[in-house]
Image (cartoon, rainbow, N blue to C red; front, side, top):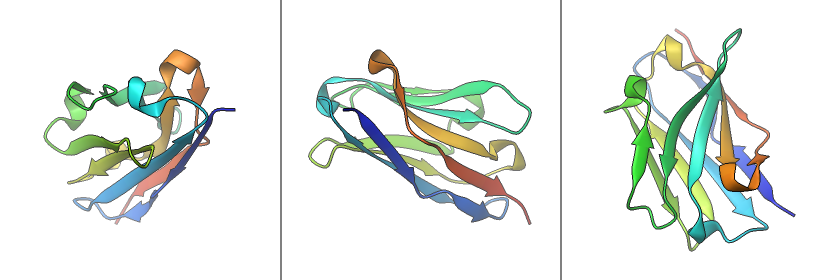
Length: 114
């Protein structure tokens, strides 16, 4: 069955950096778009970033452009989100999403606070 396991969240000061990882299994990872979606406290879901199967096409929501970088290692079936210059508005639970398959990971918490 499909499994998506995120890691790498934590507490970081404003301006800091984190790298999220998502280990995927149970489907042909290299063939599908993968996404990062976040949900902030009291807020709705926001599609933060996406990457095509081969990694050649990328998507970012405007609020993270220039600060976040999505990447993937298809040999390791792993999705990444490198986040720099984190702001308080970036605090949220971040989910790894295999949209085509309707699968979400359990999420990893990112807290941005001094």
